[in-house]
Length: 571
Image 1: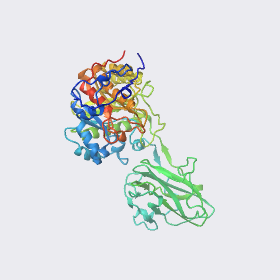
Image 2: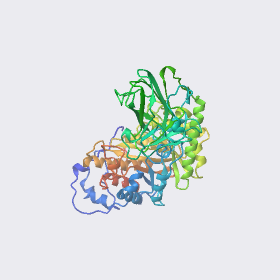
Image 3: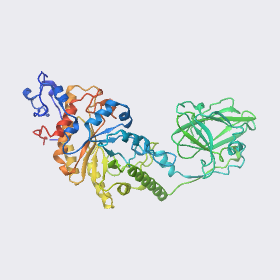
Image 4: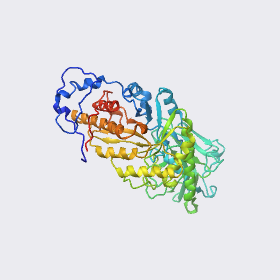
């Protein structure tokens, strides 16, 4: 039968009355979750007592490890969260902080290990770490990666027709320039310019900076011709996403804070945005006086470091402006640059944590949502946080990633490919398996396949069973990597919560029944309590917001312990 849903009638038929039962006795509280009558004599007299009497989860995981996806900051700062994780699980997966975006410096691509290193020092030594994730399209430092393949900019001769005095910058005296509000520092970086060995103004906003004038540099007064149009142009970048504007002191008295088409895109806005790539702010302004002066206001965003190339900071007669030259990189050049960036990132990351991490999600979510082939971004919708490696390296990018990871890892480390909705879209599951075969045909080795399993209480169990059969047939290690079960409401009643518990149980039961023991590489649940789940307006976890065990906890524990084996999966 298809589309059979788990519907448990426990809450409708049970009056919980008072005697205590031992967890070791066989419990039939979900002995038939498909709508058949339930004999009240089979029901534990107090379900909550049964849940409370349970041991920690890892006590029941005797054939494989049980893990949890966690938030690093919450683990360090919240004792209840930390203690719950330490008591119940064999291993952890860091949900965000070990990904490319938080690890990679926008300036130069080097890695920021401090936060994760500090976390691992607090983590019990016996707690294993599942590395997540090396190559994905989300949570990437897209600004840095795109800066590597951005067009080469050849500015026009910066000395030609420039009426702005740069001498106070070049000799570092700031003569004529006013550091009106220096923020966390305004200085000259001798090697910060567009070209190697050339100077840049370095401006740093404070940790509390929120208003544009909180980081402000005023240029010298420039003599101009009233009524004449001039072009202001400079090149700027920042170590992370930033924002700035120009406010006028002299020469444009009618509007000191105008909306401007900063990047000549055709749209005038209040401010310009910055990232790690050099960008040319360039606009025309008609003078309203014989003197001209403006402020660079860069205090919108806290903790941002900006660089403005000195040699290309110009104010010129608009009729005599020269345009910069942009040279696009070829597809082959981009492929090599992105491959090099991947090599550096994976080698450094895996190498640094070689003694603490034994398993890695090497490639995450490679198959598109329809299951028709490899996911691509085609640079559509890409942002600071998104970068599709495959758009530049081609569909064989995953094979390269596995080869790099294998070279950097220890002998015996297990390398996984991971994807979602495999239980929902069997075509996608099959396509992932085909892709694994393709990766290995190119000389790479994939040890295991991860299925995320973000499901809900209406999950089709026959499809899930078929997914497990397909995965088992690969002979690979199989891991449930991100299990949670949505209840599709923010206010679930007892019936819904009991159904959720049955789903958790059935997932574990099918995993253990269908995946051969030698291929069972464990189950990781995603999130600890409903309050810290990544899913808003739902209750998908096995603890509630007060760290109280839910019926789902018992469902998971029963499945791990191998209880309720008389329940048959409907055909």
